[in-house]
Length: 497
Image 1 (cartoon, one colour):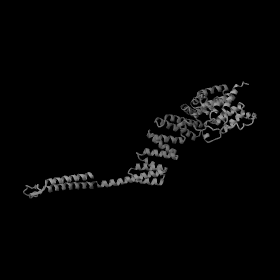
Image 2 (cartoon, rainbow, N blue to C red):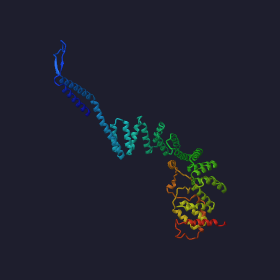
Image 3 (cartoon, rainbow, N blue to C red):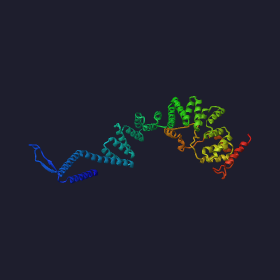
Image 4 (cartoon, rainbow, N blue to C red):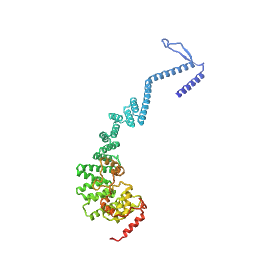
């Protein structure tokens, strides 16, 4: 506006200067040569100042009239634009208040403001999306589902509606509905990573292991999941499905599924254990042993040792020892390998060999209950009954470890339920960690494997032990490592009887 005022002032100044320069003397003479008609008029003399002033006034009047007519022409549009701008501002304010109410958890206010926003917004799709977001923010699942369902009617918001519905239904436990929407979305859009996650979650929540394997393979091909994580998840799913098939009497399919899992993820002990068990039932002892040896090389586990023993339960002690040496070689320096050697030595009555391997482990730091129990057994077999009592006392208060050392030889090594397999898909799939449900429940511990055959020996030792209980100086945790080493040396130096 300022530039127009300045231009007008400059024009008037220039006009005034022109009029001043011309003065009153020069005149404009108007005449006509017509002899008749309305064009005939008397000759008139008009000062140039008047003529210029009149012409200027005429031009300015013409411009004013044209501007006024233009303003009248644009008035309806400007009125409409002003109303629209006010409506837009009101809609934005309603949207803001709806989202704030949702974040605050005020369902009533969120619904009210969302309805107002939908009424003011010219775009129904945007209104539904804001309403759904506000409902989700305040936990109003019913309203969110309603808005997402309405989005399915528009091509623009179809994918958004599918995603929102699938996730809301999954959260509510409607696994069938969540699977339907996520499956349809994943088939229509291969880049929909959310559809893979939601579909996979719904399938494993419903314990549909075979369907989850197919979804996992599609997700891996589309690069929606890391390859190594997919491999571990698939191993858990295949093992769970093999366990289900075995329980349903479909042994052949169960064997194939379990062997595939054990070969793809040898570090997953449940797969190798189940595969070895199923193979052994069909006479495939050699292949079962190879699977366990491969698994032991990756991640030794007490359950694998138990399964390996079972494969050669009918063999002679010499053959068993030879087989176990093959298992030792698969991972000779691992803690479980050393403990397996200790257990086998004690089971064979070779307390010196067992104690020599166990001694560095129990004298380094705070030994677990498992190690203390093995030490007690070794001391008993060496007729050191007082020290055996000390180790048993330490075992009672020593920290327990989820080491699976107290597996029941007559039961399942991995007695997982459906919910346990589901947890394993993520614990092992994401981090490579097993779960131990019985340990987590705080269930009573059983004797470690090496103690299973030593109950009679221990009972006899208690009868023979007529020495008084350890003195107050032999308190729990006061075992002298130098004394242990000296006693071991003296035992090794004794001539054989």
